[in-house]
Length: 624
Ligand code: ADP
Ligand code: MG
Ligand code: ZN
Figure 1 (cartoon, protein in one colour):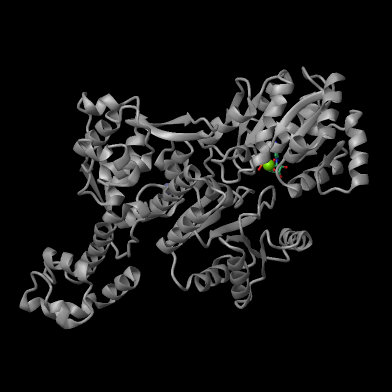
Figure 2 (cartoon, rainbow, N blue to C red):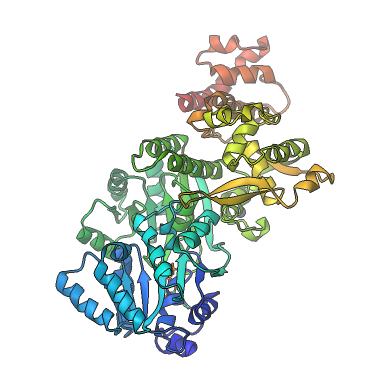
């Protein structure tokens, strides 16, 4: 029956990975959790079984979906395929609602889409569900975009919390939760909040092999840069530019239009009609590029999106993954470009800290997530795929990237140095070992290792821990790489813990292989890379609470910049000693006189001021 519905109703020749398995599980009455990347084909996992009569349960399938536009889109498609589907939400008119309602309550619908507030707010809907259930005509309950149930997801909807209602009232009715957000916290939140019973879990690799990932430094001329890129590389090809605010969407669209690019903007401040017009224009290729906030894209299925650009860094990696996931659904090569600047990261952090909707706990979580995004941006060494997939708890072998990310390509322009980091690694592992039940996130542990004295650290006495500050001499970037490596190799791991409010947080604990390093003499060797070309490194976002460390980190970035200028200009003669370079990095002299007064300056070196001037200027600008 399943295959016949697939071919005759959906007109599809075969299943994609995990679809059949998920369908069979729900038809045999089990709770199911489907984790599939955006565009993977989640809808079919519940639309198809809704039409199958021979399952353990049959009748009407209820689908909870967070957005009216999503429901409209799906119901429209289903009706085109002669499938009995309808939706009930607060936006439909009273008469419309009544009509759908009658169909629903009498069991005439195969699929009914409900918005979550219908469950929490409408007694009528709850009564109808009860009536259906009594007649044994409630087949299953599906929660699409289930990450909305988790405040950890990037898209929390308070009404989703009320969905625990289903398992409480109807424990034997199978539920299915679907999402593209693979983070372990989110998964735990979903299972916990929906009360799923030992759900069958279907997950596939999140790697999207046809997407190219790149992070570029964001300059003042970024919009011009994008305009040229579009006109040169993506002529007449479809793309999305994600902007962080309504204003930015509108301004970017206006400026790109000056370059003859057919573009428009899309954000939540527009009327429903305007949004629909823009979306349609884009889907029918009248609009080439859309400048949008993250309000755009959920459930929109345009196969030939050739590029997704983030004009501003996203707030978390789940969001980044979903937004970039909208590129290349047709499987063809597509680019994902993110423009990163420290200033944007600070702006976003400020917005989180000022957000009145978030309590202290949530603010800390959001700031942590943002820091993970900045770590991603600033990590110019590890494969982008490896970084993102590790975040989603997936192990990925770098060679499978096939040079489809900037770091794998740039690897060729870097000198690789394999450094024995065993001593530091032991200290980090011991640090985690001595936490004695104190729950710390990866970021907090990095802070302790680096010797920060944030309020959290001092309050919990961690500044007295013998490993506090053990990594003080390492640049921040190297500490981040060390932790990344220790997690990847299983020397450390993250454990999800649910707090009283029902939210999960990841804490750092010893990994299964911790003792290999601590007692079995396993060496920890990490490849570090040095650019062969000059590239201005951006200082790291070290959090508001971590000011004492900012100067040295920024300094070391400056120092490296100056060093590379030094190396580029004089392979063997000495333009400046190490001492001079360090002092120069600190003072960033503006005049020749200031330059001549730097530490360790020799007479014959004063002539090189000119050579450093450009990079000094750039660094001063960055500092100011
Ligand atoms: P998701 O909800 O996971 O983001 P959708 O369910 O919207 O993805 O599906 C994305 C696209 O994949 C749709 O165009 C859908 O028709 C197509 N699709 C889904 N399953 C199959 C299949 N088995 N064979 C071919 N195309 C499929
Ligand atoms: Mg979907
Ligand atoms: Zn790569």
